[in-house]
Structures are given as structure tokens and as C-alpha cells.
Length: 112
Length: 114
Image 1 (cartoon, rainbow over the protein chains, first blue to last red):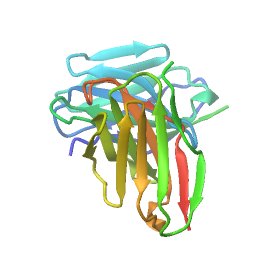
Image 2: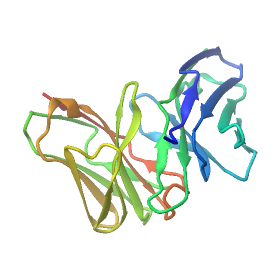
Image 3: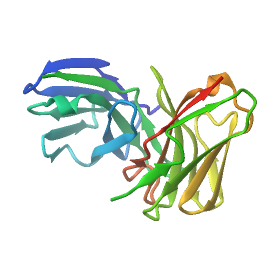
Image 4: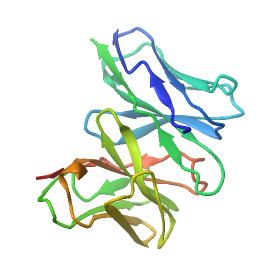
């Protein structure tokens, strides 16, 4: 399965600290995406990194992709209480009927 | 902004009832998806559609069917609801190129089958 597996399953940090979340996958991918989900809501797309990219930034977010290790990390710098949410990685492959496959998610708690 | 709306936020149905969950997107996206989300299992794809009247099974299609008569609307149908279909249902849409573009999600429908 190409399903991404996030690590750790849960993370609790103090406001202002950095949060690092990891995702590993098993097969070749075209792109990897990170999503956020606030409690009881739908998912919101955060960032997409393609297989030929190694690093990408968006505001306080930094995503890296290591295709040789089949892994990605999401770094949230200077975390805020509002960053408290579940975070999912999703992998996409090219080809007929390709689709995103989501991991089980990481629960991030940022203490004020 | 892309907007994906779902017909209900919360729904309570009885076992054996036929249930319709509707999803509408306003960005002319070709692709639409239905997922269910359960604690510890993450998001699992039920069905998806890459064009009007076209549909493909996802990972867990049993007990579900779908309908896409218009490009902007994708309906999920539970022919005979069962208690194990109690879950959060999420609809999403994306531009063409399945798996290549980000998906935009609706707010979800929390379905309880009693």
C-alpha cells in the first residue's frame, strides 16, 4: 500500500515551540500533501510537494521530501494555540484512476 | 475561494432506511470524492467520480452507491443503513489529474444510524 503513515500519533508542545511531524510511505509517488483538520470539521489543504522537489515553504510551514527514504516532514515554526488540530499526509501517484491516499493523522496540541 | 457544501452537518437515521448525502462544489472541478472517517482508521475512500455519470469504487464501496448527474453535485447513497455505517462522511473535489492536485473538502456530515 502507498498509504502514508504519520509519526508521532500525538504531539503536545508549548506555544512558541516548533512542531515536527513525519510521514513515511511505501511506493513511488507523484506528490505528497499535508492537510489540517480542526475538530469536527473538514480537511484543509496546507501544502503540496512534488516528487522532484526537496523542500517547500509556506508561511510558518516547511515541508521536506526525501524520496530515497520515502519520507516527508512537516515543520510548524513558532506554534500557536490555533495550530491545535489533526494533521494528515496524503500521497498521490500518476496514472489512470490515481487518487490520494491519506494516513491516519497526527493530533497536535499546542498549550497556551 | 473553492466552496464544497454538504447537505447536513448532523444526521440521525434508523437501521434499514435509505440515506442520501449530497455534496455540491462551485469550482467546476472534474473530480469528486466521498470518504468516511473513523477514529483510528483515518480517511477511507468510498467512491470517486472523474466526470459526470462516471464513478469508480474506492477502498470500501460495500453498502454504498453514488450518483453524479451534474458536474457540481455528487451524492452518496446508503441503500439500507446499518449501525456500522455510523461515521463522519467527507466530500471533496479537485481539479483534473487525479492524485495530482489538492482536494477541497466540505465540512462533513456526522451520520448516526440507530
